[in-house]
Image 1 (cartoon, helix red, strand yellow):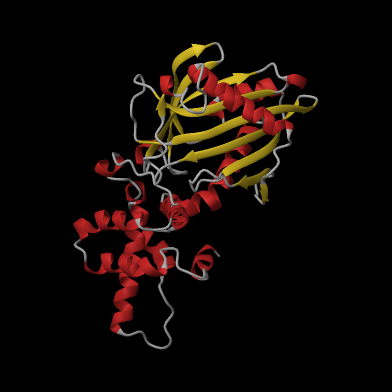
Image 2 (spheres, one colour; image 1 turned 90 degrees about the vertical axis):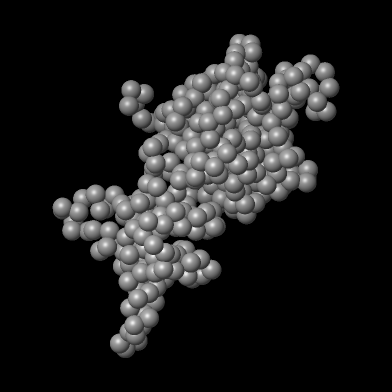
Length: 358
């Protein structure tokens, strides 16, 4: 069924434009250069195709790990890459192409832990399409035009006030989207000249507001399956700090085979004494000399959490997010980023059903 699904797609997973490129890599490239060439071709795929390819190859690799039980070698599984069905007896060209396709997929299954790694020289690239306009600022510069007095605390307070005003207005102005995560998902355009949309996710949590806030602030490892490391870089006051964390870019991959590490460095502040027992948290990217550069840096333009009680030991978490993850096309943000946010908030919800000593 899985093979049939990919065969029946309107366009090949490797796309019509790049299918021939992958085929020629395994027809004409020397064996010692095929991995390097395939890695370069993978970078040319649309984001969504690359992510599906990564997940598929990891699944097939897991299947081959039990070859002694299922007899499924990479070559046996590689029939999924059959390019076309031929009528009658295939000619020599068809045979050569089918052989190259089989060898190609078998090779990608075997090398899936290396195929999606970015070369070190590319890891150092500052590859944001809005890079020049949206650089993170230093703490002392956050007073800027958004908050002319009071430094970074005034900047964060303005962000917090904006969140509380939106909550009071029931977060009006968002267009609803469907999601399979049992969450309310919506988005809206921000009219500041940049293509990134503002995404909003709302999910009911089986815990009180302060417990949910603690899970977001201090217990990221319980719900973020891609977290590699995290730390408080500097404590600014009892409710304000500079925080850094590092994540895998791709799912289903152990850290030693990650395609690319992405780190986030932001200043964040929170309140727990809002009316009716609500809590709030706001974050924004910041530069800090005490934080190391570890991979590609994401830029948090907006990250706000509003948590309000909605019953006995229950709360509603609303997360508003606008983050430049780097190296993504605007279409990915407009179509997929919101669903990624919804999945993340759903994992926070689900983490309350898992024992804390897991």
